[in-house]
Every structure is written in C-alpha cells, then in structure tokens.
Image (cartoon, rainbow, N blue to C red; front, side, top):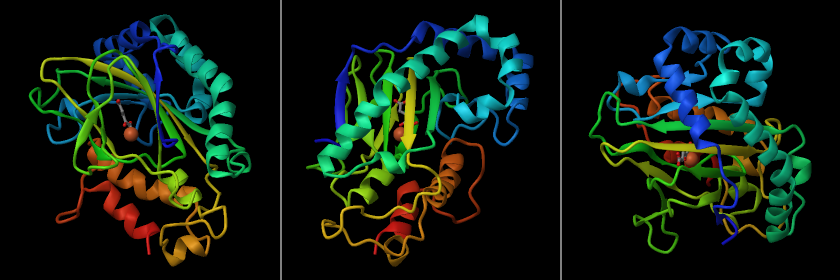
Length: 289
Ligand SMILES: O=C(O)CCC(=O)C(=O)O
Ligand SMILES: [Fe+2]
C-alpha cells in the first residue's frame, strides 16, 4: 500500500522541545502575540480550542518555511531558547534527507516522475498539542475526519495513541496507528495525479480525555500553480470532473477549498448558517465527475 506507510520509530521528533515550546507560548501571552503578529492572516500559534468547544480540541504551531522567512530574525529573540531551534533543525533535516527519496518512491509506484510537480518546495511544518486543557476537556475530537490536500504527509507522534486511519477494505472502520510509529499518508493531490491509484487516506485524531498528546507533521504538496490531473494517460480508474480533466483545478484552488473547511474545523472561522462542515464532500464535488 504505497499511499500509506508505517515508518517505525527510527526518526525521532524532538518532543521535549515541542512540549517546551507549547508550554512557553501558553505561559507567555505576550510572546504568543508577538509570534502571531509576524503572520496576521491566521496567526502562527492557534488556540481557538481554548474558547471553542466544538472545534478540534488542539493547539497548533505553524512553522511554514515561507511564513517564517518573513520575520525570522524577530522570532529568534523570543523562541530560540525555548525549543524552537531543535524543532526547526528537525524539520529542515527531515526534509533535506527524505523528501527526494519519498517523492521518487511514490513516483516509481505509479510509473511517473513527480519531481517536475514539486519544484518550489510547497511544504509545511505543523506542531499539535492535544492538551486536555481546552474548552471541552471531555471531547474526543482532536482532529475531525479528513484527507490532507497535498501529495503526502508524515505524522510523528509522542508515543501517545490518537491517530486513526480508515480501513481501505472496511470503510467506516477506524484503525489506530501504533503509538510508537511515524506514518506517511497520501493526500488529494496524489490521488488526482495518480489517476486514483494512490488513495487520499482518510484519518482523524481521537483524544483520550485527560491525556495530553503531541504530534509533528510535515506536509508536502505540489507547487501551487500545478494543474492537477492524472499524469499517466489512459491509466485512470476514476471519473474526474470536467474541471480536472481540462486542467482548471490547480493546487492553489484545491488548497482554497480545503482551507475554508479547515478553518471551521480548527475554529478560526465560523460556517454560514446551514453550511455543511464536511471537508471531503466539497472537494469530491470539485474533482469527481
Ligand atoms: O496530529 C496528528 O496525529 C495528525 C494531524 C493531521 O492529520 C493533520 O494535521 O492533517
Ligand atoms: Fe491530516
């Protein structure tokens, strides 16, 4: 199953630094504000769950290389001595050592070259703190059911159970990812480009009330201007929408669709009355015929 791979525990994310970073930002609202001021669109430290009991019950630190590039020097002052250095080093090394290999493996599986679609490093790093200390301490919803939008994501866990993947053979059945394993899973872009050969893997995070869980995720997507369509002609086993087949759905457009629902789920924006909060249904309407 090339769209889902358990990577074991050879690569260790620096969870003591990640914990230190979250603890520091929670304890120092002025530092959190300064961090968020470097990226005013939605901020970099997301704490909607402290007020909103219906959203995903998690805190987030966004470490997008492009966003950080904006004001990295200022961040130095606040965060480098509180775990930030180790976290940045981890993601930088992970990307430089593994990205090329993973893209060539995925490409080999489907008999295509994925490198021309991934020239501009459209990657993101995110840290999650599924802390029990939120507006809904008893809620089991750490992260609602979804598929990622990109090519693949790698999730590292702090040895606490929570991440679950929908069974391919029995939809509706949820399989826990072993707590000590990292996992690579494919997203919507891989699904489209591979003509459906690679699934976009549905997953979610369940909270165990009273238990804190930390995770670190690397997201890899094609360049924003890439038109998403099956790249091996005649091989697709999926009926895609005319928009996809005519090359009208680029990665940026797919991401916009994803972002809207993502923001609701994460509590950074509210749905209009009557709007459906399911993230996948919208994307399916866009890409399937
Ligand atoms: O925290 C996790 O284990 C997974 C998070 C996730 O699925 C995501 O951010 O897309
Ligand atoms: Fe995800």
